[in-house]
Image (tube, rainbow over all chains, first blue to last red; front, side):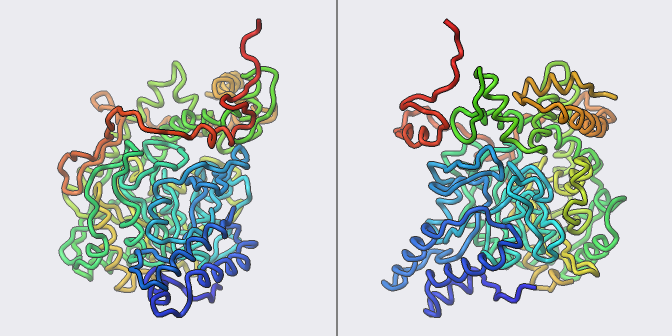
Length: 481
Length: 106
């Protein structure tokens, strides 16, 4: 479908240094691609050419002066529309923020631009990152570049589709229950959820604060590692960001994988897993064994409780975080006779159905008389799920599973049944609850040509380990197994 | 049926959502289905389990992580001249205030 050349961070750099094209010409070429493909894909909600060209010109000026180039010089990137960008409209895929323009940049944005990246625009997503198909965006669904009658996954569907279709070289998404990894799997590209606290969330518009993380989409593991090396690290503006040393990911990924113990939990291969996905992921694991990894069977007995736990914890936090949209400080206001009336009318009109559903679920779970039975119990089960991971990482260096139980489904296929949609996250929410990092890497395709994803988890701050296995898998041809 | 119409209306009021009449029944059915599914959490014995109230990642080497938990910075006043930029986004502002419908009747 897409005959466009696939750029990588490395090939952009080489082309700039060889003066084959300027950063401005490259940005212009990407905007031309977006103009051609976006009407169909709906991956971008807003473009910021002024900002992009100003940055490209700074890169070109540095090249003209022979100055050393920063790691992402001239690299076109796309940003999920829940991450604040100064002066560039940021809607979270919601009508309630239709006109909102942040007065500041998120830390991740600042770091990308400081590293020379050219931000092209903001990508479509499920409203407030709540969804698994991108169909909950107030601005229409995104289509999967691999098969336009299918969803790209969600909630970071626009960021995944943009990279998969060659409309940006890399992109940022956010993952709360699978929202980076699952669209990565559906669109057939590497997609990394870092450890909780590894990447600053200053400027990320909150959905569920004990779960939300920012991470990259790329077409190669080297590119994902390069972006991680830029955005990872402590930030005094985010008290939940970790002051833990950031390793040199580009060095980590080339280390040999022979001897690493890879855990395969049987709980992720049971009923509900599509047979084609199962076959490919098992072939993927066998390939890593061929590279010298040692396969260790695992049991993670609380896996089956993860979706129920997640949808209590995440909705409870969302109901609290989204209380701020009240028509007073930003976004939509619907006039009312009293203050309460204004709040209720504004929120009723501004939020879409899934966001309202989750706010009500979370409010219910936190309300007097139900707190112990739902929220407190879910927090306890979350401890058990986290302990499953801690126990597993006593025995193994990484855990391998399918990313999602099926390949991308058709638009409209699951919209009538919210619970059915939630189950698309069944293999990803576990790692979200435990705070561990996880990646989805391409692992072949179905007979119908739909991408399949394999997930790799490592223990906290083990992004280097994940990327190392992913890189070995990539080099051995695993992506097209 | 676990969730009643009254439950939905009570929760909507707590959440400041002015639901349309036709939404009430839709959400009642959906919340009922989702909460029935969530009911599987009751299967587990959690009497001796501590709730996970904070996400505190451990270090990659498994060590309990200086710096990995939430960290508070010193309580020092720093310049923050953002009032005008913030008010620019308000639906109704008379600098330096946000304006809202009258709350207290005289």
